[in-house]
Image 1 (cartoon, rainbow, N blue to C red):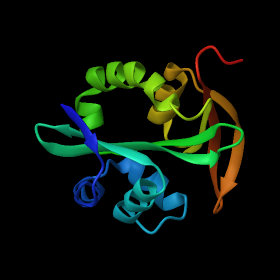
Image 2: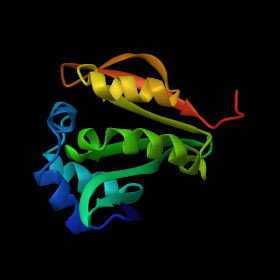
Image 3: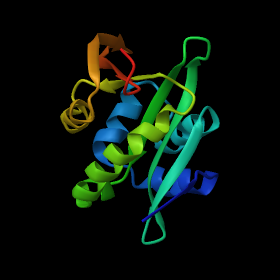
Image 4: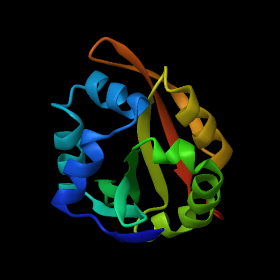
Length: 151
């Protein structure tokens, strides 16, 4: 498993095989589709791809939401390789989380209320859930993670 800077061809590969929960979340948030959602997220953030056996399986990144306040938007979308490699995924995300705070003290985003696996994962990572919001008629949950040491 290797982490490399995200590239356009990774968007196509991951988007065509995106896991169902991520595909639904992208659709419900009003984006055009999985490939375009990945492209848009990649363009608006520092984005990386996880290669498993040389194949793009996960893309994630952090973009600026409020530079002056030190708030960034963290995101992650992937294929079923997340579930197939869940032990590695949990360990890698826990170990890699501090590295996402290089430019921001706070990371925020929303997650589909029906995406129970992602909600459990975010809680396990230490995310604080700030409440429900409606996006295109579907409930999403606003979450926030703070750089360790910040109150």
